[in-house]
Length: 288
Ligand code: ADP
Ligand code: MG
Image 1 (cartoon, protein in one colour):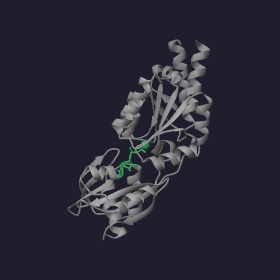
Image 2: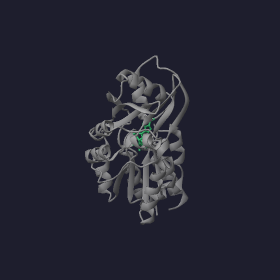
Image 3: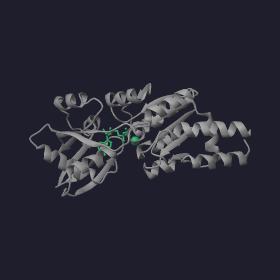
Image 4: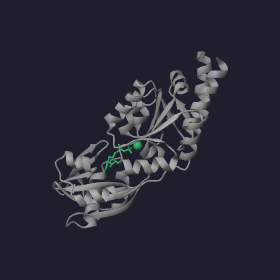
């Protein structure tokens, strides 16, 4: 396509709420054959609420929530927001906060180390996960469970629930209609991932992946000759957005994700993905 045609395409895309960072991105949009979608904040709204708090120790559920809330008040993850909201006002301060991207967060609360995150994270940190906690995590269905450890001991767990974007199932159907393959890629566990994939009609699921493994998953697809678009919203998606043939970031997501992407989706609506691909097809085909 001529430079002018491409610029026209970029302008038209902007009219649809799809900010394309330059003509090359529009060309890339047209050639994509596989769309990989992050789960939390992309296929789902990312606005999570706490569904349950449980104690696996002598600590009260209130304490579990307070310790977790204190740590999470320094995190921008959707799970953190849900926990902080549920915990309410008057949380103790957190010291030495550290975000463990794609796994959890930790810090010191009232002088004691507190970790909030996946069972794998706790195990890696040398914290023993009791069978009761593992069973609880496995029985949550579509909800996501995180464990809360204090002083190296699992104190309890918090389950959070998210809702699928209302437009997601239709947008996925349109992508399949355009001949594209769809894959759900998530750091969350396989049970929650499968439940969301089934709800919106995504056939393939790659679950329980760390941010670096998200990159590996994209690279593996590209090595098999696929032309891959990655749609994501979080800091944890940024490396994958940057390494995909086309990175598409949700506008309400993290600035880091927006920076790593080729395309920014201004609307809180997954229809923007098939819209962008249809527009790239049309613009580049007619003016060529
Ligand atoms: P997704 O790929 O679905 O956006 P992430 O990669 O951000 O998910 O996180 C993967 C998992 O790591 C979450 O499902 C959660 O169990 C855990 N996790 C990540 N960040 C946090 C946090 N701040 N607090 C608690 N758990 C977290
Ligand atoms: Mg996300």
